[in-house]
Image (tube, rainbow, N blue to C red):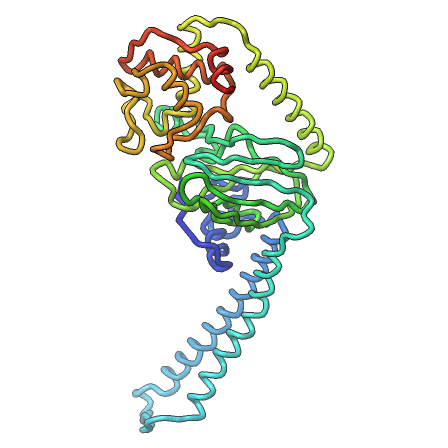
Length: 382
């Protein structure tokens, strides 16, 4: 897979990024060296503006090189041409100054019009807040009371070259962002830790996610489908493991997804919070290994060796070998001293938290012999 460069949010940058989008992000083979097929009004405008500029540039190249070739052939030395002797020609100088100015002014009108139109987020049908984390996205639907995290789902074995790469290698997630077709979607974009950038080339939308700031953009998807992008701001060592996937559904299917997601999420949270079972240490370690691999290994490493000083080692580290209450607190609430350590209490249920706490205290050479039960996590929430 080709890596994405870090770009800023100018229209020309969006155009160039769309041209350079890797083929893995689109079903169209031809888009590898061109735009991905536009799927929103914004993307169509960008594509049309690009074609207009391309033809104007092509015409300028043809005229300039045509005159150069004509002059070199018609007035070559072998035909006895004698070069004119002069120092300046004010009329020519004025003409070749005015023409570029007129061209730039002519291009400024459609470009400025497109930028102003792209920034008009009023009268949206749906509002979604997007928060960037190292290295995942959180999607919140305030009206629908839905919130979830979207993380890379490419198997670790593919990343480590132990398996052949899948069709959407590094461009697949566990929970895609879901939107309805034909509705204006306004996105509010921010970040929890460092600067990220949310980009879906088929939508023509790229918005930087900056901690402490909320930036907005909008799009309206033309057709149902799955559209892929990435974080395009260099946000850390696993920057390339932070894909964006948007699933566009017809309105009736979107309504069904909202109802079904809210119901299943509520049922899952209730069941997990009320889990009174006392698990064995082996049961918790088995589930905790899965949770650790999906949520923690990217920072603390599969071996628990960490990436000091930002991500300390869990193997024989204070977090995993100190008091149980301290381990539970830092896993659930994050670290005040180290903002890179995020709080997991809103992302994992009680069973998952108990499992991963038990796993790290009894793995990587750690042998505390104790375990956390879901009821311990439930008590720590209050």
